[in-house]
Length: 262
Image (tube, rainbow, N blue to C red; front, top):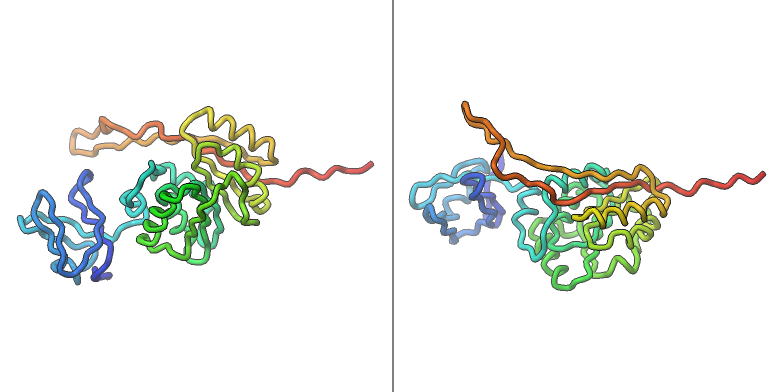
């Protein structure tokens, strides 16, 4: 069993709409509509225990998952939804020891999820052209404990990828088709490129570039997520749902066939 220590990040969960990712520090507290949560009373308790506010409200103190850190991190840009991030990780074959190039970093949410899955022996090189975004991402990734696993490069990936023989290239940017030739040169044989785009026009141009650059197994997918409200005698789909967020296109690098001399 793991105890909550001074300085740990804790996910305080009240219900599906009210939950907070906080760093507990001795002598400090958190004010919410259900009273004051004193961190001194939380430190030393087991993860999975209930913390009690000054008004008697009980809130679960949970160890944050990688998805919690990604969703809750400070951001200046939209992030890839967990449903799409999970598909990207699966299609890219990302796991412990993988070397992954990613662009653009944005606030670092997707980079943090990839970094968690390549740990402890892999690495993520994330390209971000904007200095302000890069600074936010570096701060977020350090808070997520991924310093040394994820490297943020303030560089325009449209000018090229310096890394070679990487396992995967993951793209979330406006013009992924312009990066396809660079991705081909960076990938090892059989390596995977995965591109996330919100519009079909972006997706079409990316697929055309993939066909022109010696990629195979080119497939585009879209995921729709609908929560089911399970209640005794009245189970039904939720009124609201996460519909279209983007198209996920994946492909694998192959070498041009050799020309047989007759």
